[in-house]
Length: 443
Image (cartoon, rainbow, N blue to C red; front, side):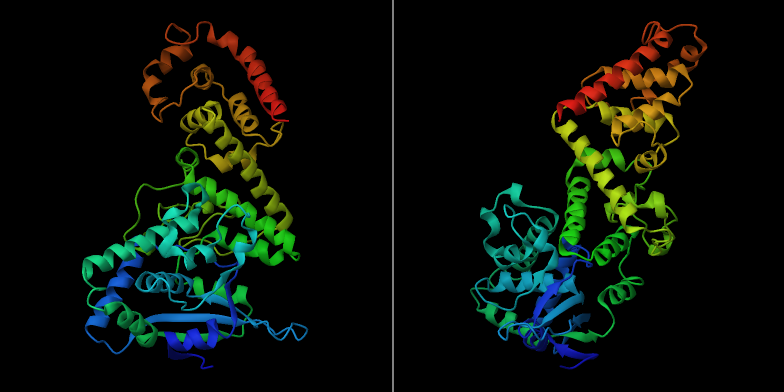
């Protein structure tokens, strides 16, 4: 097998994907390409095919051959990890599946599929049958599958627009053959351990955020398979919440996320999060910070402590999701209110610093923040946020700033909470009882 040389896609299919059991390891990030990028690759390849361009180069692909297990049965293939190039490989696979859906081109697996619940589709099965995926229900979809589906549809639309009569003119088989024979990769077989190779490959290329590094470290540090699955399931739950629960994301991103994406990477600022970045970055930035292009250091990282932190976050966010699905907006409104009143309080920063009497519950942290407030106006705002049963708008506090001064001076309280100051302690007792009843009822 040639190494560090330009080789055709056919060569890679025959000598890697068909000769080895190739899989994308857990340390790899999820499928990230958007519809524009996927469609552009398809259209560019179509243009190269029509122009009879001899070669079309798609950069480097990196594999790691695992040491062979001599005790393994003879009919089992040796294993090989795809360390770099998964975005292009997955997209090319979908492109070929669109061109000739019944053709068995090559196959590869995902180590993270091992953590998928039996009731859900796994990535490998979905990609293999992606041309016939319309029958699958939305409830079975998660982030990777949704991106596969969207990008497949983008590829389909782009090619049908570029050549409406491609199938009628017999182009399908020729185009697929062109991709196999004329697409070239720079082939690299790494002798470096996969984790180190992955870090080296990504640090100066794709934005590599601290949550990616923490996830990879936790997986590497999990010696037993069931522990790796716990890490995988934890990150899947966190990712599903932050990427698919709109109300939760709009709440927790306050104070972290900028409104615009910089036109150049060098304009990204320290300790800032941008809309095109991995949302999971927010989970780690309070403990590790961020450098100009996202930190790779994990100074102070301890596997057990980190896993405990992330589990706590998962439990709190899951509880928040349950509340919102039941139209219980208390915690949502409370944090939204505190964020405005306490100088842009940040969600995960609040969980980091307040640990007394919280019992790991979001309401406990919120109540601690409430106790530390001194102005009657701010306390009244917090109490008011809990008295209704509807979702408050983000400008709720701003709409009441006109009565702040007179409320704090005690001249009048006719607008809000008659005798409000005397009610603060009573409210705290009632709110604490509400928290206890809520969680005790959950069992």
